[in-house]
View 1: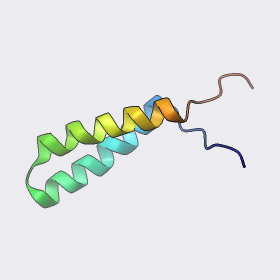
View 2: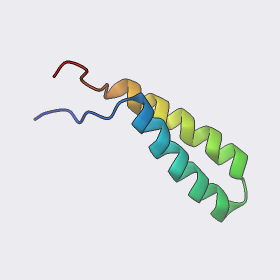
View 3: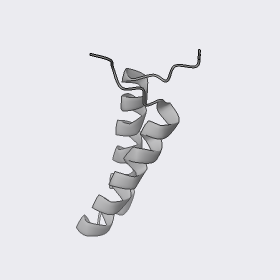
Length: 53
């Protein structure tokens, strides 16, 4: 089974998207954006992109 290649930038963008939408629903927008960016960074570090093609 191959690990998914996400990369830090894609992870942060994905986390920001989820954090923003959740923040709009709950009202805690800045907290959710921060948490989303943090989660995205962790995901990006766990599944690094392959730069060698």
